[in-house]
Amino acid sequence: MGRKFFVSDCEGPISINDNAFELAGHFIDDGEKFFEIISKYDDVLADVLNRPGYNAGGTLKLIVPFLKAFEADNENIINFSTENVHLINGAVETLNYIKNTMPSFIVSTSYNHYIHALCNVTGFPFENTYSTELDIDSVEISDTEKETLKQFRSNIINNPDFDVLEDIFWKEIPKLKSGCLIDMVHPVGGR
Image 1 (cartoon, rainbow, N blue to C red):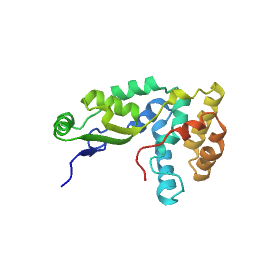
Image 2: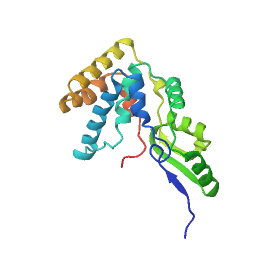
Image 3: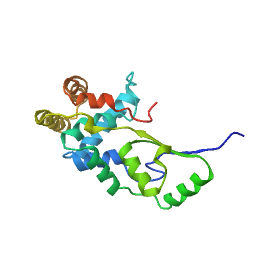
Image 4: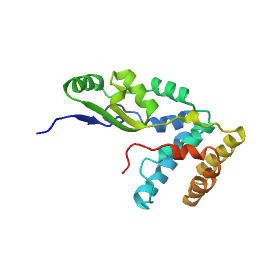
């Protein structure tokens, strides 16, 4: 038998968080509803239409311009994530036991900010994790663009029609500076 190692997801087996959902709810006006609409849209693109080049987990890409518009930055995402790590009972003890028994890794779709916070709370080595990289501070956008994105958010909340979402995400946002944020995020997971 070959060498054994342990790999775990994060949200579910280690914590009860849905960090991206929680970030949307914290930063974006009516963000939980907004996130749910985008998540269902993501499911349609990935699982129903099997859109070429699109992978499940794309919700983490699509919400980033809106997080930016509502003043999320690397620091306040880290702070919020650190203050809101909710572990499964016994997770710390189990992770400590396993990492001392065999090479152990966490692979998660979550943003790296949350995984870093989780590692700080549990003592798990961050270098043994794989997560979705996000540097939201790498792009600056104008107040005018923030207002445009806030209007798109309102349009999505008030009319979550598939064609509206298609137009906003694949025609309108690519024209904006914040559109590159979508291109920069590559969610871990999916196919």
